[in-house]
Length: 325
Image (tube, rainbow, N blue to C red; front, side):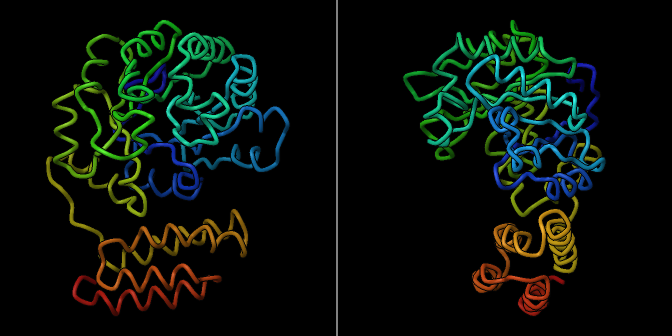
């Protein structure tokens, strides 16, 4: 498929997730077969005021491309300014506009999913960003704010009118956050009324889910969020399944251990010996979901402070899981 003039080989994408989809995880996802990765959402205000943490989020690695840099903000002017800065940095292949984040601290500032309640402002932002850059521009939305304000069909038409090169749809309202079931039929309805690529998002965990959402919605690509936490192998599984029709086996314990250590080492290199291990804790707990001894391993991971602490715990993981090593 194409997003603008950018060709994407595999229609399985990594969703933007705050605190998850940093450089280290994006590199792992790409290596596992992910077609396109999204950054954590980046504040337009942070770019405007040259906040050092924000600017550090624009530092990318050639191994994580193609990469979509997701921006959030509330005014057309500030979003256009941020988009120009991102393009000038050369750090991204696509710019995405966040209109789906449900977090209270975001929506109280009329950003993220709150823009679903203000179509005029949303259209102005999309139009301004598209005019400001030559990169492809996409938008990620939810089906609406709540059950009384399901307006994704109108918003999708506005996105197309504004020149968006693709639209990603999370089939839940802001009110739902991540509860209940994703509404795939609404994604199908959007696909029928727009000509730009549509990316389906929500509740895609298995190869059966993958084939079902493509069959039901005819979407052009899918976006994997929570199912990818601690599970970069999902991209290998899905890409191989699409390519061959066969599902590869789950990773062995030794393979898990190697990837966890690689992930940790990338965080250590990027964020240092204090922050790196502490950020790795949540990833390590996700990596051990569903494994024998997982509860005890997660308890230990949450106390880990050094690389050696992680190695000791990973050796314990092998002991718990001898039968699947």
